[in-house]
Amino acid sequence: QVQLVESGGGSVQAGGSLRLSCAASGNIFSIYTMGWYRQAPGKQRELVATITSAGSTTYADSVKDRFTISSDNAKNTVYLEMNGLKPEDTAVYYCNARLNTRSVPYKIGDYWGQGTQVIVSS
Image 1 (cartoon, one colour):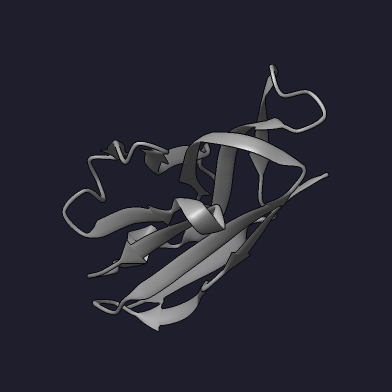
Image 2: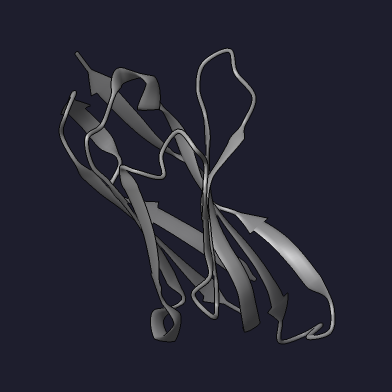
């Protein structure tokens, strides 16, 4: 099976920083894209940032000047460095990966972590 394990969430004051990590493990053949999404109370889930295995990145406009996504391909791990946090960043953050498994290497699947809570207080 494939598992995405997240860490680094928590509660911080406005202006503070957090670093989220997500490690993919299991029956993985190849990872194409990893990223982060978030869902605030009463709102739809939205894309925060993504990164491909070649290092190409995308960001939501609301975070692009404050957040940085990076990855370690050898460890199948993606990171999200969050600086200058604002109360409106409060949400559950979900790790996502698009990948092939070893058992079915020619099919691309979409996998999600369990979500980690980020709370930013003013």
